[in-house]
Length: 103
Image (cartoon, rainbow, N blue to C red; front, top):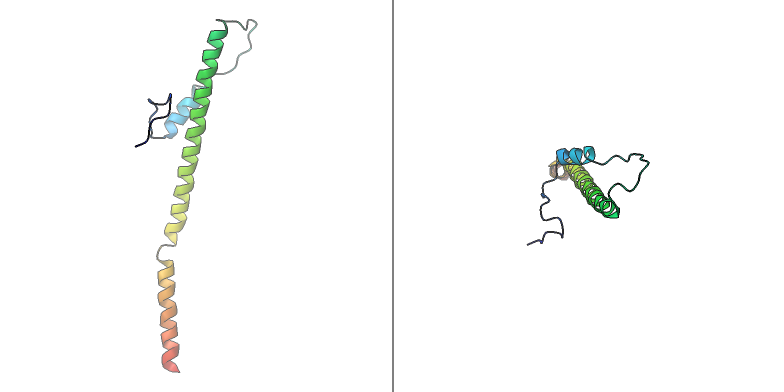
C-alpha cells in the first residue's frame, strides 16, 4: 500500500485537464507595487510556499497528462497492427505449402 506524500494527503489521485486549467487560472500574477512590505516577511514566505506547491502540482499534472496521452497514442498505433503478424504468418505458410506441393 502506498503512503501519501507528506503534505499531499488531500490531493486527489485522479488527474484531469479541468484541475490543470483551474490551477493555471489561479496562478498569481506578479504586480508592480511601490511598497514591497505588504504584510512582512512571513506573508511573503507563506505565499512563496503556496506558489511553489501549486507549481509542483501543475508540473505533476502536466507530466501525468502527457504520459497518458503518449500511452493512448501508442495503444492506438499498436491497435491498427493487431492481428497483422498472425495474418502475414498464415499467408506465408500457405504460399510455402503451395510451392512444396508443386515440386
